[in-house]
Length: 604
Ligand code: F6R
Image (cartoon, rainbow, N blue to C red):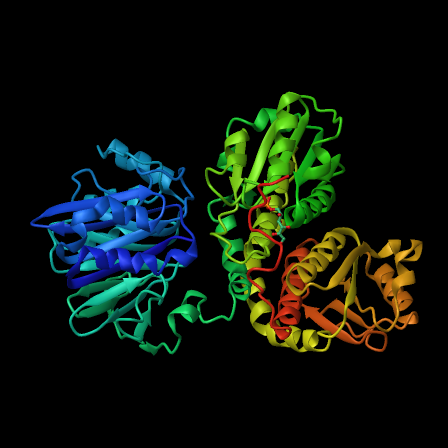
């Protein structure tokens, strides 16, 4: 996730670097800073690490400056390179802008600004903000930024510095955090509290639509109408390590809490008039209309997301969708023709087996569409098209928010292809738009209850996860999460398969995690739960709220809100992540870095 840091009130260039160092934990691919001296703007930005930026700055590090803004970028629009790194500038090189988030309407804005004579040099959405501020600047920077943000659709946290405006820097936010503070001499703004708490622990979290004007040692907050608003100051108790994790104990739990935002970011700019718009697939409509087979290739958690795609797509129309783990697919003698679409899913975009499978598909003349989280990763370079999940970097090794982001994008993709075939599902599109709020409410209201359930199962050595239909892959994913971070044997099965063997495992020492939400397979799941109960297994059932039918037959329940059945995998996924997290946490394990695992599996 990108990081922003800025200060005003005097200091050295090196302090901008020090601020960025404290944001490094968020993950990034390039870094840059801007400051002004005697009406001239200095910008230094590069791909690579903050330490490389420090080397580039060299003798400038000790320079005295009045103010500066700094950024670590995690690419979303445009590959990671020096030009796309932030700060971005206007035509006159007077204005520097740093930005976190996604400007949905940047293409339209860019066209308009170009027609007005503005010249663009990067592929970023951010650059439009610099040109908009230039367009509206009339001596009052706050007013120019205020007018610029009124033109923006999407999400942003921005910082703006103008070489001719010595005494202030401006920040603004919508849906992407910004925190402001001052210590009497200087004032500061950052995308989280980590780089601020060494200066002051009394901070203001900007709210959506607000702007902050920072001057030396003071700051003011404004509504987008320009009206000044009172500050709500909060005192931060966290130390820096806790602050990196937003006050959470581990990145994993922080990242689970980010899932509603991830869903919303994955949807941003991809829905228009209740239809899915995937600009990334431009030029492919004719090809997609003639596809009669979809092959999905992926590993681990990404493979489970692929399986859910299959069930969801088939619920839209009968179709030939095959999902295979890459380490098997790459050795198969697969039939691929011009009517086959291959979807390769990889959070990192670097998984060796998935890349080899992509090579196989291409060698047979097939087309590959990548679903990835890392702009410019090998997979995205090897594939014809990519739809990014925009989840921001995932730091915990076990995939959580990236999985939810993958599901979101795969649902959009399924709807998009289905629309090309003549389908129309405004109800599903609408329900996806509501999902971030539903997911947020679910996490807030259930995290303690799930912790409580998990606390009862910390001592067990074996678990069986079962589900049916679209919730069968959730069983696989739930079992994988528990294995990875708590080192507990957990197996996932189609509930209907129990009687064909796995049921022999069950006894009072082998708990069952069963997904029995209110879908068309609910009655079948009830029977499966009764079967497991008859073998004395303890059952934790994931149910729809208000469902008391199984009260006497289960030991514990995790309740989900009532949803259209196709949405359950999102919340079941989150519920199982929380369960695994709390089991592992109760055992005091190294949750963010489980033994034997790596975030990016670049070996075969
Ligand atoms: C599980 C997990 C792994 C990855 C798998 C594929 O939590 O993180 O199973 O999902 O290694 O990785 P990507 O998606 O990067 O190809």
